[in-house]
Image 1 (tube, rainbow, N blue to C red):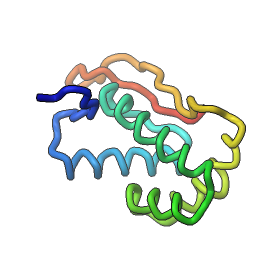
Image 2 (cartoon, rainbow, N blue to C red; image 1 turned 135 degrees about the horizontal axis):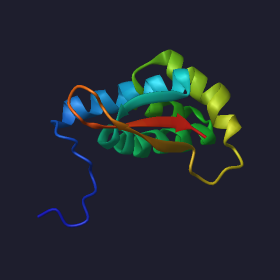
Image 3 (cartoon, rainbow, N blue to C red; image 1 turned 90 degrees about the vertical axis):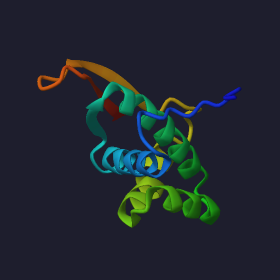
Length: 116
């Protein structure tokens, strides 16, 4: 039974999903916005919000947890040096999802995930 389980599976196995979300969050951190499908944007939003909340703490343990999830040193450095301090006084809601309309090739709903 899946009582109280809230994982967005987005049609992938666990390892693939973790890689996709990590890559999506790395792109979001490096470029401040990323265009993807709506389902991936919503799942990536939850992942990114949790990582940014850890970056707000700024301690070594939080940095290690974030590095274990993102696996990219440049993204972790930028997250802890620029993005974390920027949202120090914000209680949450660091990202926004904006719908862009259907994708031309297959009609999938597109969305832009961006930092607020």
